[in-house]
Length: 394
Image (cartoon, rainbow, N blue to C red; front, top):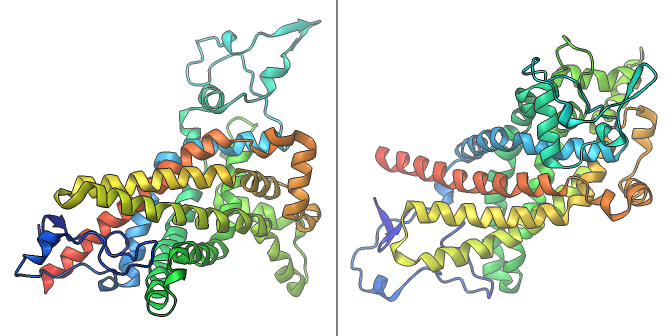
């Protein structure tokens, strides 16, 4: 394997190996005294060698894998938040839909009043993440834990395909500028780059996010009916405000961006916290593994940094995620267009207090930590592979 430093893999991108440190020191953080004795200086890997399309391909592949792995936790998070918003879920049942011969009396003790069976209150609620998994599998089938996966993929691939490359480009450009003109601002570059990149990606792909949330929040109550897909869900959002007036219809299409302000209010601070936390952790881990680091160590450093940063950012922004979900599942088009993020947060606090604001915290953190770790580490690996493909052709 070609090395950009003695004993250190060359595929560590500029994002992780040659970044300016938090004291504004532009020297290579991983350069050692042993490097000075090296007579030959191999070519270092630079992110600028990759085109935007190649970066987008790297990020899209990472998003594809992540979306499939963590989708069950996304379903659990959305249902817990929708339940807190008042969406009814009848979670008691007599028979297992996967194994009809097996009675599920242990899932709910049914009382009989007259001739009508009556479920206790806990039968109509999800009590936690594992309870969501258990009841969804028993009632709707194992595959329903991946409800909305097609929307997740349709969302994640273009979103991350825009987000990660734009973050790379914004970060590198801003770091070059601040290093030469304002070194004291360099520590804030990941934060600002993350905010701009996430905002651009969020606005571009928001209608798919709206469809995914609705697909995961509402379950089909009629047996034998196939649940609506992304397109049918979006058509269902538009139909209540449809008009014969073309101009009015164009104005009504803004309902597809219902809750965008809540999404931005969640994702902008999430990205700022995530990248501002991830970059220093990644640097420290890469320094700690030293010159003997192999591909596994670099992959592990990226995953660990992404996991920790994603978990912290997800926990901090959970109330804003609850507000986003509540706005997206509102079926009254008039009310949904009038709702604001601040008003929604007040309603959540009034109805459920701190518990309401933190609804779905467990599955959100459990989903986001691994997701960020997978995306960041896979993104670096694919960039590495593409870089060596370039070298082979040179």
